[in-house]
View 1 (spheres, helix red, strand yellow):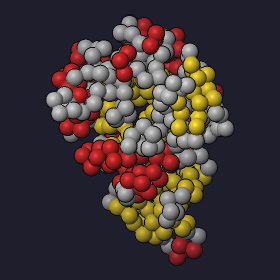
View 2 (cartoon, one colour; view 1 turned 30 degrees about the horizontal axis):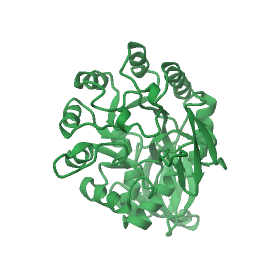
View 3 (cartoon, helix red, strand yellow; view 1 turned 180 degrees about the vertical axis):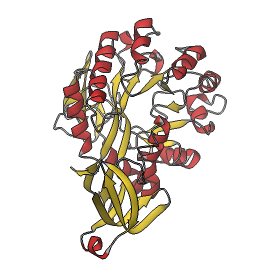
Length: 373
């Protein structure tokens, strides 16, 4: 039996003091009062759940689109693990059908090998709106084909998240995907509020990077942003790097949706966990300038944000408590993915994916299934 003892432990019931996590075979068995001996060896700081990122395009110098292999996934996962991401959905940006299939094969190999950090795959596209394509390659944006549907519906690739534009697919397509166990999110869309509503009623359950690359909220046209904020059941990914979303817009989203429906995401590119500055990307390139990634014309191109940076920004700059920010980085994405039975909180029966942060919200230690990294 392993154990981790700390000053404070963030549990579903709130902060608990001087507690010990009792861990066996990578799973928390119970959380109990620390003994005198355990208190003598306790960690100073707060234990919180490991982060879950549902939108990871790359890391460690690797972009998943460029290298859709298991070895690439291991590099990406290691790059993000150092920033507290203990579970992730590697994300494939809009690409051709062969690359989509290769990405599925890579994730299938990761799942078969019980990789501790890879939980499935996020296909961000290719069924998007050219009007809101962002950095996605327009020549690859298309309507669904049977071969791609077979890839999306594979049962050996863990959780599958698919981002679509509701004006580019039918409600019946969304219903079909949901019936196959695929999570459908809405993004890169210029759809009307009514089109978005139809997609949500058909089973779409989330929005990819709220505010970015979607029809805006205005007085006479609520758009995708209005639907995202209005529909209580919808989850929303939010990039808190202060480049994608104005801090006050992020505050508003959190105030309206609450920690139960806002998920912190990175939209990370290959730059995270590496010294990479310039990345070739289809017919253009992505350059890092400080904490911002853009193409030469100034278009935002993903981020170099890591999950701990997202949590720290949310706490320090948006006035959100660690308890709330932690939920948005752990339990909320776990609930969105339907994995709350094993991920997202510190409780009996959960994987012992644990982070230690100090009082300044500096990341101090990381455990994956009880193993100190």
